[in-house]
Structure formats: C-alpha cells, structure tokens
Image: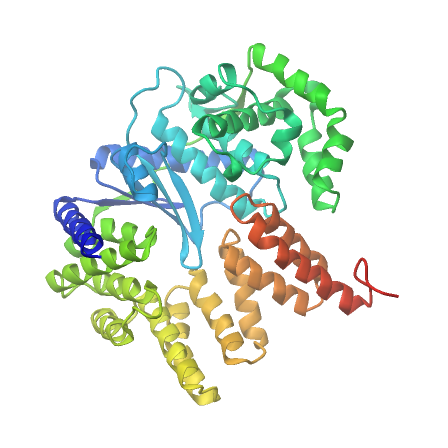
Length: 507
C-alpha cells in the first residue's frame, strides 16, 4: 500500500511540474477548440488545416451545416509517447491518438510529432484526421455501421491532403498501413466483416485489420464495378437485415470479394480531386491561456483519462495543490471540484466538492459546468436524504437552468435537466424532453444522451427512430456488447406496445 501511494505521489509531483513548465495556447475555429504547447505559428497552421479538413468533409458528405455550435476540444501533445502514456500508462505502447466521448462531452488527443514518414501526409495530421473523422461520422451519420466501416471510413478520410492550388485530394494511399497489408498474414474479408477490433490480441493483427478496412473502403469507393455497394450495404443493415446476409446480398460471393481485394491491392490506386479549392479559413483566434488554466491542462487530461482509483486520486491531489496556488481562477476550482466528484462514492468528500464549487461560482457566477455540477450535487443530497418533494428539486434545478441560459449550445445542462426528473421519479415534462432532443442534436455522438433520447422517442411512440438509434449503438465497436441488451429492451417495449408476442413466447 505504501508503494502504491508513493507512486501516486510521484505522479502528482510529475504532473504539477509539467503544469508549471507548460505554456499552453488555445486556437478557436468554427468547429474546434485546439490546445497545444507548440508555437503560435504551428498551432495556427494546424488549426487552419484541420478546419479546412472539416470543410472538405462537409462538401464530400453533403453536410449543409457549416461550423459547430458545440465545438470539439482537441489536445495536441508533444509526442506519440506522451499520448501513449496518457492513454495506457506506458510511453512505449503503440498508441498515437484517441477520441473519447462521455456524458461531459467529446474530445480528441493527438500529437505534433511528424518524423518517421517518408511519403504521404504527416503522421500527426493523419492521426488527427482519423480521430476527427470518427467524431464527424458519429455526429452526422448516426445510423448503424459495422466496426470495419467505422474504422475504414476514418482511415480512408485520414489521408486527405491539399494540393498547391488548394484542392482536396481524397483517397490517397495509407502508407502507414503498408507493412500490415503487404508483409503480415491477411484477415479474410468474411472474417473482417464480422470482427470487433477490440477482440484482436496483437499489434500486428490490429494493424492488418485497420489496413484491410481501409483497403476495402477504398475499393468500394473507387472500383467502378462495385460503385454504390457500400451505400447499399449500409442501407440494408439499417433496414434490419442481418449483417452477414446484407454482405452476401450486396457484395455477392465473399470469396470473390476477397480475391478482388487482393487484386485491388496490386493495382495503382487512384484518388479523387475536388473541382474547386477548399478555402483556407481565416477566422482563427489564438490566445495564451491564463496561468491557472495553463497549469491545469495536464491535470485536466489526467482527470479525464484516469485508468484507476489511484490515477483519479493523483489528479485530484494535483488539482488541490493547483487551486491553492491559483485561488482566484474559477476554472481551476471547477477542475478540483470535478476531480473530487469523480472519485468513487466511498472516497469522495462532498463537502470539498461544494466548497470548491462555491469558490468557482463566487469568482465566475456564470461558470457553466460549475453550475451544472452544483445542481447535480444538490440533487444527490436530496436523493441521499430520500427527499423527493418538488420544492427541493426545483431549487436544485436552478443552477442547471442558469447554465443553459448562459450557454444554450452546451448539451450537458439540457441533458442533466431532463435526467433530474428521472432521478426524482417523475415523468419529464415536455420542456425537458424537448431539451433532451436539442442536446441530442448538439451531441449525437454522446452515447448517454443517445440512449436517453431513444427511450424518450419510444415513450412518445416513435419506435422506428428509437430502434434505429439503438442499432447504431449496438454496432459501435466501442459499445456493442453493452448496447445490445438496450436494443433488445426497446424491441420488447415496441412489441408490448403493439401487442406483438416476443419470439419464442408461449401461445
């Protein structure tokens, strides 16, 4: 036990030292908020390229909306080793970037390291484009997609680049997958279509999987005889056809598809070029962070990515130290409160959470997330006392309503307001259900919001839409096994509402 606490203390010291040395800057574009310790020039160039990529995706996928009300935060670390350390605890792990979404919001982590790539786009650009493609797909393509399409989509669009005239080049080779595609044993297409990448045991198998998913996606987009098959396959799955049956129905003989894919790899790969140049964005604001927030960024990342109770306590301890040093910074006090709240129920100190929130709100009365957390804390206290009277719950909802008025484009206050009625044991009123629908529009990639919205749709009798949402979660490679019981529950609710018998039910 002493050894564990010593390791945690060392982690706190390292995090605080890193925070003290950091000089983070923030770049804001129409779709992103990007944090980086790099130079202002490199950050501005990175932000322009990423925003340009966003514009290209909207053009290619016929998304009319421009920019995001609910922008994606991105953190650029100095190296792949730092990313791997944050995500896995080991700098030597084969991990170069990740995208995460939970109830508090989505964010991506990538790196600024560009070495080791002799051809094609830079490694850092490709990593970030891959992670953002996941976010974009979850936000604008909310149907049900097998894992290989989800990863193939991200790999395919990750290699987008821009020529000297500003036109987007789509479908460039994924040179980082060359070794896995050429040198390692290949996964048969039939296996690829049914494999969850999280079930793979070795780095080599994962590399082959991603490479094959990219190659199959590329072939289905570019090989004329198979034009339209990918769209038809996705439509068949979303129409309720089982995935293997949909594959055979659309692609034909899967052994033939496998042979075609092998032949496609040996052919020169073509790529598309947009007719018009993708404009370089000019609305980019780069600012240095205030000292408190600057110092809090590494600890915020540690809090959001804690892999164990010891990690969570270490992040909390670092933020407590930081709050003492930056007592006038509302953002730091909120981070400290959030870190204490995130501990397991037996360990966290609710009085500390309340004290830190009071400090944050005293400095910034309109701090959105501090007000949301205050509302959650008040509701938790009511539940602990068994108090379900309206007066107390209405009082607890006041800071949540203030948070929504302060930032109507933040989905969390809308979701927490809706959830407060569920926690109270009351049917949510129409205004709360409508707010949940708005939260879903702002953050459709958020699984918790998506689940709540699906049940709200079912409660209103809109089972087709509810089940479609549930299917999209069940196919997600990160959520599939956990989401299938949810899908089955919705199907049972539909059958009960419509008077159907469940399969196998007694006559």
